Image (tube, rainbow, N blue to C red; front, top):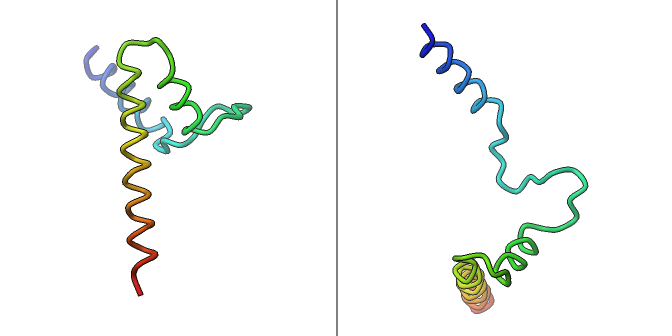
Length: 72
């Protein structure tokens, strides 16, 4: 019985949580890109990987834009 109640509580919590990744707390003025950039410059272990991911995303975006501008 206890496991069933716990399962129901977990399911309800998951169902009520926001599924939109871009949402931030009200009053937060930084964009997701700005937060990631700040994180990439921090001394947190693994933060350099965030910077590499941002550079890879920028490179891919630039490549896509270049390809789009060449297309008829």
